[in-house]
Length: 410
Image 1 (cartoon, rainbow, N blue to C red):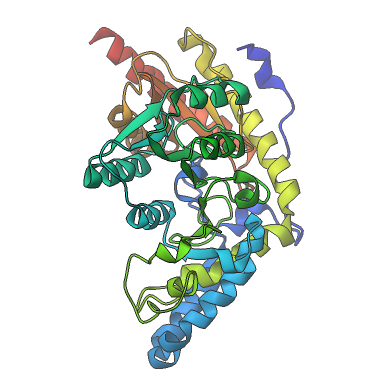
Image 2: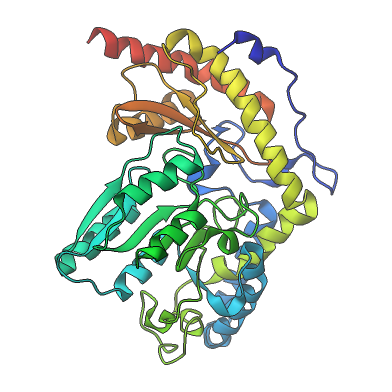
């Protein structure tokens, strides 16, 4: 990478429509550098307080709260579904993306010899769920290998080569978690349907980053997290489907709503804390009111690009390949930067690096491993400030270089 990229003008810190800096609207620890929004999200203070008030209501008058909570969940569902381009009657709240996948997997029946197609970019927990489904019926899972920099056409051709009459289910990411790239899921769906296969779209990262994410994804089922880019409280995600057999979908907990059709049966889950669902519309509305979602996507892209320039310039002398990594179909707010050789050789090694940098440098960052090569997966949201990348360089890059050197001589 050209070191002069570092000197490009930095975008200004985001200011909200209400007049204050975006950073001040999130209750994040100022002693820590926060560059990993994509993993667990971050909830604005306004939304935290709203959820706390909901919980307070439940604690003050539990008998008034719990018998009526399904009405509040249904109302929230009607508010949130249009954000992903869905109808409320097609959308159900679930605790997270993995729970949505489990709901779908539990509804399916396969036969010995049937196949499930996943990709080598898939989220590990979802792939494990697909493998468990296959084991129940004597089916098998095959992974479509996708080059990191593959174009949309190349990805479709990879699927075309792997789809056979034995494939019953395709599980594919709308935005890949380990590699931070888009996949052409609508085209993959069309191709899979031609072969008689159904498609489950993992849109965990898509809400907020892709406008009308569920509507444009294709698939027989789609799910996406609201606790990531929409900044809703953790434990809030949507499952969306218009499939004819959607009444085969059941919540992970049997409760008094069990005799209701989909999706109403998901609105009532006994004493489950549903405040994350009920508060989700407040988070979506917060970003729209204070910055606007279309503008937010542009802002996050500019911040992420600046982060690549700053951190990439600092890492490049220690990396033999270009640090800024071509992922073929990049997303708005996440970027991959290659690490020095020897780091992130596998998932365990990448996770260990994440925690060591948190403990030693006060940096929250995501690291991933692809084909034995380690990468920093950079995330940016509205609260991200250009100085965060500079502090990352000051605190984390020396540690990264030292770790790599110890690996080299060991």
